Image 1 (cartoon, protein in one colour):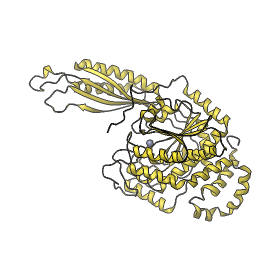
Image 2 (spheres, rainbow, N blue to C red):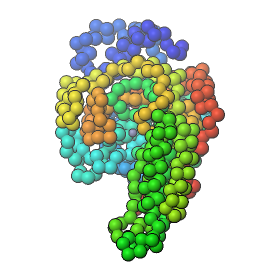
Image 3 (cartoon, rainbow, N blue to C red):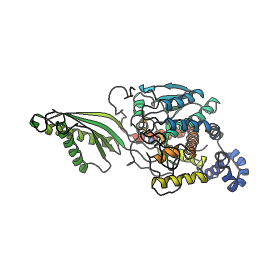
Length: 504
Ligand SMILES: [Zn+2]
């Protein structure tokens, strides 16, 4: 297939494809009414134009869809937080193994990190799968707020679908490699602890992404689109001050307050705000600030995140932060220590890769919702206290590249500095749904979420078919990656030593 396909050809083909393959799945009624006449024409035209490997991967996803939904629902039910995703990682790894993947568990010294691989030699195409939940967001799969288990975690970022959807795509490609229709290696990465910032950075530090030709990932969203927006680079620091305790009334002159230093430090940080670029964000909390007012605190700790649209911007502000800590410690007459907990790179966009995703999204076709699902979406948004604007199952046109991100950070950014990375966003919740909320949890445990996940498996798998078959596409993606990366040399922003795996 010529890449990218001719627009008008693609449009006809996409429409027919949607009707014949994707829609069979669960939109039969809709189809009968609107498209039945076209259906008779489809096989004739498809025989001339369609890529049989793309047909095959879509069929495979349909074949395994119930198993993928079960995986997603199991992980949704486990709702395990970062570094504790033992059951979630296990169901995914066990399923991959049962399907014939070679599975390596506990990679990068993280018990819940794993790799499932199939095939041999080049090209090696990777796909990331997350599965960690967020604390305190437990919610039933219903359009009214009610915890599944009071105080428990919930999938407020939709990572239950993330892992299962990506594995579905890898599985479809595996079948083609096994049948001798594609040559190379497909590799699924079980990547824990995204919400804790650093799961993939530890995997990257262990060199696990180095030999990939291209890496794909996706994220649940309220729109279907190829991601063209970068993310923010961030550094996560703990700044600790150590002084001397004394009676706060009887002999305060003998004391040296670590809390004074922490407060002076934050005053410095707040004055610094005027002299940084508008893209910089600095936010902090006190994690140690004394215990009682009548004892001068001898220990205080500030937990600070510095973000900017580029790694180099974070590095610049971090140097100034270190001077402020030193100054604050001098003023208060105490000792100080700065610990880097972790840091992330911004996401490097790959427009060539995004165009490949776009073309395959059009091929797979939009997500169509039942009246019950639309009613669910309206009700849940109203229950939350927001305007109901329906669900966006359509495919958004490719947006322009946005490099000055203001949308937070992701550890996919580090992967994108090692190998070319392309990201899909797929609808799993009502339009403009509040993320990291019970609304996202509820939708991720029912058919709205399932449809987004299966759409993803098909779009990622058809895009992978292009990546396996089309060497020119891989070269073009790599050339863009090299250009965007420039002179920046990736280095894991992590403290020395093993990952912080909880002991209990
Ligand atoms: Zn997320």
